[in-house]
Length: 202
Image (tube, rainbow, N blue to C red; front, side, top):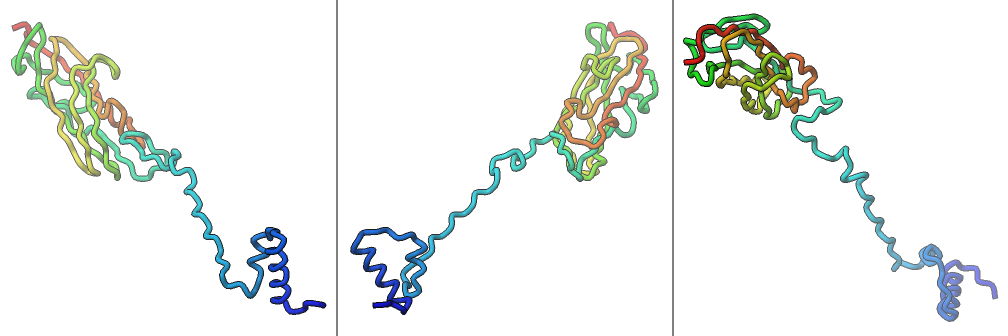
């Protein structure tokens, strides 16, 4: 007897499989056009590529970000004020021991002040400003906190500088730890020369 109808053929082979206990491939059973109880196995979602890789890691504040278009740009503006004297960046000035806030150990303690501004288009994170003696990496005379600055924001740093009588070069460095990502940090460092006159011993 010849089976010509597709549904009869499928049922015929399905009966043989049940009798003989032969396992048919999944696609063979699913190909039966008369079966309506076959459901497709849902596909598993593909995992995100490298979910914990470096490209997904958050940037820590202060790290330089290659290709970052919006960055801060800290710079020293105005003049450096020591006691009652304003000294333009890159120039010299003199202060008398008479204008010292206090004297101790042969040193005069003068109040200082300078301005830092963020000229960039991105915010600058918190950092520190330091004043070095005679070299850009010389002894630190004083340091002050430089808080986060929004674009266009300014901050006045101030404190006390201990200086002996004589001529000294002061290197003022905004973001001295170099933690703020900037396209150009050369304008973070300025210097002035100071001539301290008088007597700091009493």
